[in-house]
Each structure stands twice: as C-alpha cells, then as structure tokens.
Image 1 (cartoon, rainbow, N blue to C red):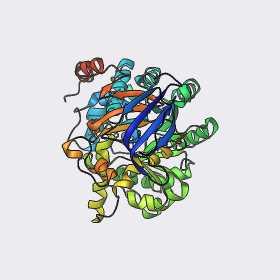
Image 2: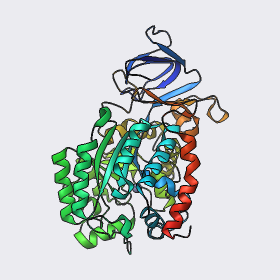
Image 3: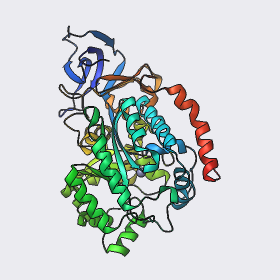
Image 4: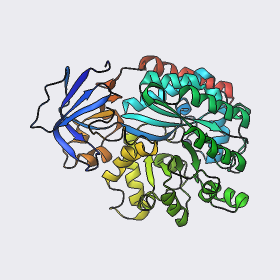
Length: 457
Ligand SMILES: [Zn+2]
C-alpha cells in the first residue's frame, strides 16, 4: 500500500489491548498511510476509505512482538533436538553456525521472518548477530520483509561461556575491538532507518563470554549511543554457579553492578532468580524476555513470571530459536506461557489469557521501547495488525475472544498482516518475501551447512 492511501477494515472483532483493554465487536479500523486513523463501533460507518476490506469472521489483534529470537537459527531446524544443553550448544548449534556464510545469514533471517509474518508477528528483537552472518544482508532483509526488527550485535571478548566446558568454535569467535568497532558502525549505518523499522541494539554475550570490563564498556556505549541492550541471563542453573564462583554474586546482582540493569535493558530467560533478584528486576525496571518453549525443551527450568510481574517488572514473550523451540510462532507460545505457570504454582488462576496476550503485545512493545508506537490498536499508533480467521472448528464458538486466541488459536490461523500500514500477508500469502524461493531452497542449504560443519545430525 502506498503512503497516504487509506484502507478500511470492516466488521472485525477488534482486540484493542488499549489501556481499557476494550474488545469491539463488529468494529472497523481505518488505516491512513502508516497509522491507525479511526476505530469505530458497529453503529458508525467511515466514509473516507479508498479501499474497503471485509474482516467479517476475523479477530484483529495488535501485531505480535517477539522479544527474543535468533534469526540465524531457522536453518538449524531439527538439527539439535532432545539433547542436553552443553551437547546442544557445543556439538550442534555452534559448529553449524560457525560455518555460516553471509548468504546463509541472510536466507536464515528471511526464513525466520517469513514464519513470523505468517503467524502474526510484526516486531522482533533478533539477538546474537555475529559478523559472519552479514549484518547488512540481514538489515536489508528486514526492510524488504517490512517488519520492525531490532538487530542486536554480539559483543564478546572471550570464547568461553558460563556453562561448564563450553568453548565456541573459531568461526564464531570475535575479538573485543572488532565487536565494538562493528557495533558502532552498524549503529551509525542502520539505527532508525526507514522510519525506525530497523533498530540496532547491543548484545553482550552471556556470563563467561565477556570480561567484567567489557560489560561496563557496553553499559557506557549504550548510554552514549542511546541504544538498547539485550542478553541471555540466568538461563540455566550453571549460570548461578558461575556468577557465584567468579563474582560472589547472583547473575542479576552482577549485571546491576556493572551498570546494565535498567529500563533500556532486556534480559532473556531469567529462570534462576532469587526472591531478592525478582524484587531488584522490578525496582530497576529492567525488561524480561520470557521464552517458555525454549526453557521447557532445553530443561532449563520455569521462570517466576507471575512473581516478576507482581514485582513491577515488564515481561515480554519470545520464541528463541529453531533448535530450542522449533518454531517462530508467537501464537503457539501464548498457551504454553499460560499453562506452565498454572502447573508450576498449582494455581489455575495465575497467568490468565489476558495477561499472556499483554506480554505478546503491549508489554513486548514496552520492552522494545516502542510502547507509544505499537503494541495496541489505538488511533494515532502505527498500523501493525494481525487478523485471525475464526471460521474454523477449533476457534468457534467463543465467549471471550482473548481466551480463544490464547488457548485455541495457532499461527496458521493468521490470514492478513499489516506492519507500518503495509500489507505483508493477505489470505495467508506472503506479499513481501518470496516464499517459494525461500522455502524451496532451505533444505539444500541446511544439507550443505551440515556437511561443511562435519556435524553428524
Ligand atoms: Zn536465545
């Protein structure tokens, strides 16, 4: 859709996620250019639109926000299943990723984004972008796809890792000066381009991958360049042992000490937190990316999400990557996020459907620093919308549409997606990326990667 053109979506069930969490049945949304210009109830009709699209039988939700995913991992789908974490990283994920060419990095990013678009995600934080994946190719792909992507450049100065015996293969190791130099040039070249569609963040590696001084330097650099920071933290028990042994602190206490805890930081996983850590996460207004499938599949543990929310922390949702979740489908993640907490706390009232959808929308937007722009359907906000087709046996009937979306829907129920006012998906067909080419070439590319890496998978 060209800028300044207008399109009216009529007769939808609008799940606004606005401050009053209104749901408007039979409502219409007028999109003008990249923004939502009007939202009306069933009794009012807008006359202004150049194009009208019936959304009868559809629920429209804010475009979903995935706060933690690895763009370079969709090509590793099926390569590292049912393994313990150290084996998973050391024997599969790292050796294969250490053989990536820039072309693999670009194609893997496109495959990931295609899946996101088809399942209603319009904004994401792509973590751990190392140089060999080719930053320019990935950033250009984000622009081509039409998504909002925060690309977080890996920062490291040690090939080690907090987890016992985990040393990265040479192909993934970068030295400190090169990381920082590239991060600076990447911020200069890409941050905020295309009206903010591409943003650049810093991603210091997990504990053990950076020296104490480097974490402090990243905190300074982020302040200086006004960029945001994301990292994996307290993901497995081993991280707690490492932090205690090396710093005499918990992982979060250490991160607070080096100046990285705060509202501009986003920490993935946060499974192993003390009660005091939970309180400090809330007090510092740090953001958390909760990745329930990944935590369960890798047997990392179950984070204290309701406790974090009660402490005032902001928690978003993330798919993580293909080797640890096997999909980039945020709608599948909703149900898991709800049910694991009920099971953990033996409390069916905890994590209701509405709280989970908040994590995938408005809270995710806050975690990305974009709450005033996206994450809810409100007049003046960017037109990032996902239409879920309800005319299916598993989605009908309903009393509370949010419940049906969280507990019954699947990513493949998404029919139409807009981001920044641009149609990215229509009747399940991707409009900005070449699905045939990307899907058609993925198997050959994975076969070649595995044979180059020498991994037996
Ligand atoms: Zn991750």
